[in-house]
Length: 507
Image 1: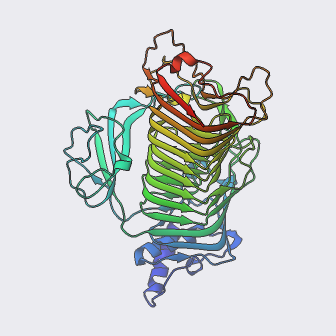
Image 2: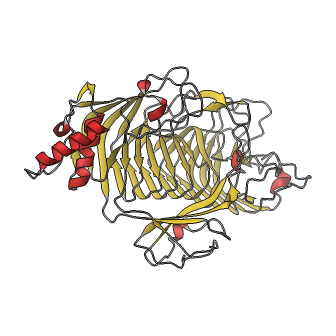
Image 3: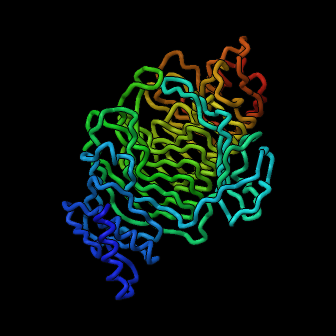
């Protein structure tokens, strides 16, 4: 890092003698030969660009090698990577720098602590405080635990928290409305949203995968976006050198506490799936994500794909999110859309999802239109977080392509025996609308297969009163569903659990 600071000081002096329109890595000593470690020069370039308020442009055709210098390169101005290539060599990275990002996109606007708000109810539309402008707001009650995970990766939960967008007068954006009641608030922070859009585009990045043991020692080493109002265009990410073992990655492109983000025309790569020992002491599958979002609102991915086959089960799902609201994917081809610790309001349009499908827990409205899904369920409500969706689910003009080897098919599946405290009441959707759906179950050959079901069994014994409530009641509207096998669409193999649903079927 001392070398980087020296490069910044020397180059800023040189820049003071002229008026460049943008900065290049070569100006700060980068070779771009694919051999020399250019990361110190990259760090220095962005530091100078931030100081001068200038954009950065990589030179087309150059290859920048990034070794084990500890970053990140802090990005506060527009970046055009062009056709340049970046080699991120994680095979030589040590424990001390595995979490450090390569690029950290951040705002010059400082977070603001919000004081004097003692409580908030989920029906509140205003927080009762003025803000410095439009903000992403985080509210926390560390004295209540939620998302208490069940299963081989069990845990004791996390402090109750969520993120929402509010304007300068404290009005909450309805698309990011509160999920919880906050009888107590231990922390509340406003992250101002920049008015000017920051753009990052181009570049082909290749990660040479780490060779660490297969343990939950996550690597960073990507692009971390911690600023709102950012547009990311045309980035490509490849992975090389994966062995039969390795430590997982949290994501090459990571969105963290950010709002109003568009990711457009990008190409990502799924990582190999490994195995490790989970928190319950049992062997579990362990994978890495290439795209992740946490604590975000109003985020859209459009025209994004992955390099690996979306139905190749050797590879982990490419996408994950936690604590997000108002997420949208349009014209994307991914092996998975996943919402671990809750999502409020999801729109998936014109997409194709592979072998790990659509996995969620959360609330609000989930809309899936013009999508192909390669799994035995359109939606899987994650059992490790209670298989809960409080709100409505709308599915239109979709195709469910059931893989070979499946023994059952259900439009909505999950697991909740009512015996685990997840930290909240669990629900099935109060409204489930399915219109113009094709169920291709032609590869289901099991002789016991009776046909597709609206609901999976959810493995709950309805004759036994659960220790923890699981609310399953509402309305199901089915219109124009075609089943390739010709078998009828049923309600569930566990029909008594869904006795409080009104089911309407029409052509």
